[in-house]
Image (cartoon, rainbow, N blue to C red; front, top):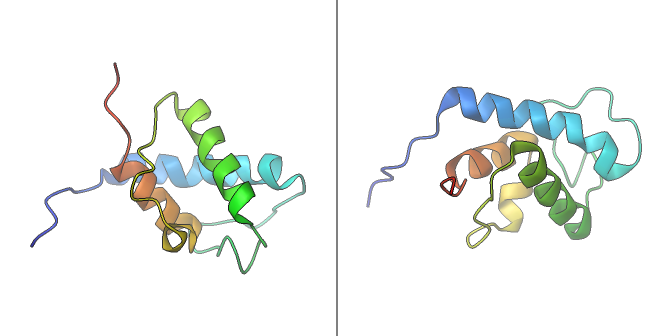
Length: 94
């Protein structure tokens, strides 16, 4: 089975930047060097609760709903893996 969905690189980059912008707000502390390769759980100590809060904040900031049906712990590995998931799972605008 081949994956027919390709993630728009510009959208993915926008999501990476948005996640980095939101991290200090969600974690309630400075996150000075967050980047695409920052690990959310290991580097930042993110919990499943703060992960969910981040997804909700992303929806609000992007003004789009994110399909969370297939969202799993491995999608929260790094800023980049989360951005990849989000960019590929935005629900169509109404």
